[in-house]
Length: 354
Image 1 (spheres, rainbow, N blue to C red):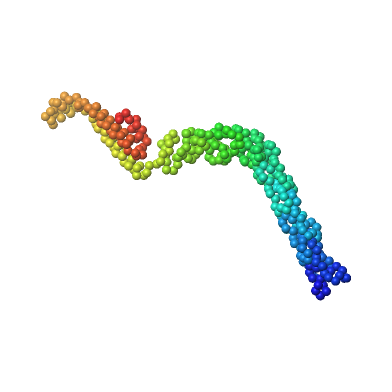
Image 2 (cartoon, rainbow, N blue to C red):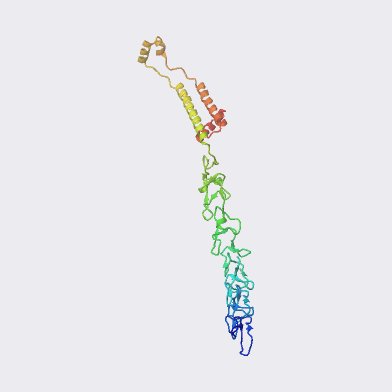
C-alpha cells in the first residue's frame, strides 16, 4: 500500500480492511487504489495472482466469457487461426480438424471429401471420384468408366481413353492407330501403333506413316524424326523412305568420291567414243570421187573397187567395255566412299562382270 492506496495488481474491497490483497486469477489490477479486481475480457486470460494485465489466448485456444484464468482449446472440427479469439472457427468444407487445439485445418486427401465442421473426411462412393485435395463433394464418373480403388480418378474401360484427367474428363473410343489394350488409358499417355505417328501427347490425330517401318513403339525408328518420321536426324541421310538413315560422309570423303566418279565417267565416255568410232558405217565412193582419188594415189584402181572399210572387230570392243565395268565394280566394292546412288545402281546391274 502506497499513500494509503493499493498498488497495481492489488485491491482493497472494504474500508475496514487494513491490507490490500492480490488480484485473483482471471482478474488484474491495472491501476492504484482499486477496490475490486478487473475481470479479464473474453479472448484473454490470466492464470497468475496479482497481475496487472491479461494475456490474449494463444493460437488454437479461445475464451468466450470474462474472468477466465486459462483459455480453452478449440474442439475437434474447429480451429483457432489467430490469437485473442472469443470462439473457434469451424473447419471449412473440404478440410478437417482431427484433434483439439489446432490453429489450422488439413485438406481432405484425394479420394475423400468433407462438409463444414468435420474432424474426418468421408470416402467417395463407388462410381465417383475426388481427383484432387480439399473437395467438398465427389464427382460422378463418365459413361464407359468406373472409379479407381482409392476413388482418386475414374478409369475408362478397355477400348476407350480419357481426354482430361479431372472431373470433366470423358471416355472416347480408341480409333485405328492407337494402342488401347488396358483400362485407364489417358490421352497424354496413349501410344501410337506401329506404322502410325502422333505429333505430341495432346494430339488426337494418329496418322499412318509413309513407310510403316519408320514408325515403331510409339515413336520413330533409329536416326529418324519429324512428321510421319519421314526425316533423318541432323547428320544422317537416306536414299529413300525405305532406306535406313546412315551417317553423312565428311566433306573430304565426298570430294574424293566426286573426283573419282568424274574420272570414271570420263573414262566411260572415252570407251563409248572408241566403240562408236570402230563401228561407224563404211564410206561408199562415187565413180567421180574414185577417179579423183586415183589421180592422187598410185592405188587408184584398188580404191575404185573398194566397197567398204574393213569389218570392225566387235569382240575387241566388247572386251574393252567389259574391262571398264570390272574395274569400276571392283573400285566400288573396295573403296569406302559415298558413291552417287545412280552410279552404284548402274554398276550393281552389271555385277556379273566380276
